[in-house]
Image (cartoon, rainbow, N blue to C red; front, side):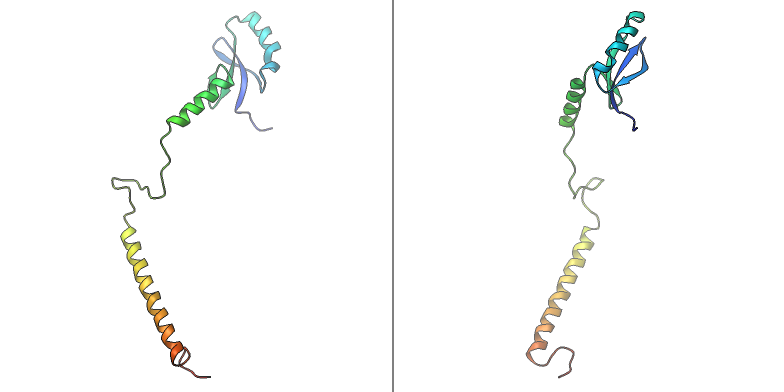
Length: 123
């Protein structure tokens, strides 16, 4: 069975016990027995590495953290001061060169159809 990362647990004497359950109601009988011997015992909800008093409190903290999070970076973001790709000028030059070659090939292909078939041979 995989480990649970969100569960109810009993804290007695400031330390967690080994009693855990997904639902609070499952721990209540055990909690009452422990509470008789340890009056400072309390039941807490564990999620995301912290103890909470309730699942609602954990959920509210998660939502608040999401609201505080800065917006995601776009595809154009780069580390450093300028936040742009330093190789972009080379990529643009290559793209321009390739477009020029395609244009020339297209023109040559069009010339070949007017006179003789491409390849220089006649059928």
